[in-house]
Image 1 (spheres, rainbow, N blue to C red):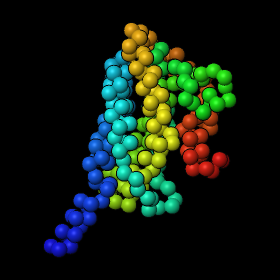
Image 2 (image 1 turned 120 degrees about the vertical axis):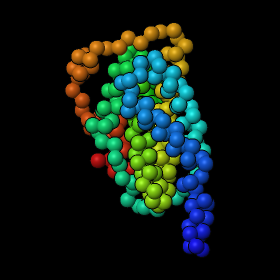
Image 3 (image 1 turned 45 degrees about the horizontal axis):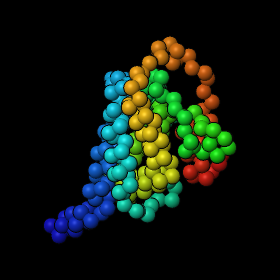
Image 4 (image 1 turned 30 degrees about the horizontal axis):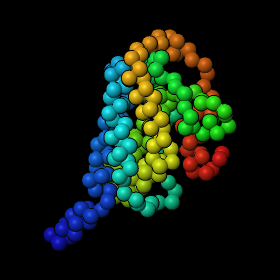
Length: 215
């Protein structure tokens, strides 16, 4: 009985069970659900859904506790390149003509004298990658793994996906209040996109750059 009480006290004081973390988990889960079912939601409706979810996710991520990692080898990753492309293509098809926008807060802008073309669907897929990996690790129920999932997610928020989120939100805001309508490309056009060089996609580069392996 005493041992059970000690376990309960430890659980109640462990920051991975704090209100801020639990609320972030809930928002991240909602985001992933909408991303995985993007084909069921019209593009303009998805824009308005993201207009509400993204600011909340940003707020909750900013409130995540500062933790120290338990493991040196990094967290396991579950989202594959195929998963990333699937989410990317779902969003791209729904966003249609609204997918592309000009961005000045992009690393490529540092070597350019003008805004660079960016993509909402790429931003959404990148954010999904971090949210899904975080959720699957957090749901293991192993406190050390949960701790490192929170730590990793917060680090990625500060250095990677937080900026992508606010970039995307700016583009979403502009589109919603512009009065424009989304023109969807047909499925055949989308499927015949130019061949992808996967080594040049953000999903590959961002992991290498953040972990410093440069390979």
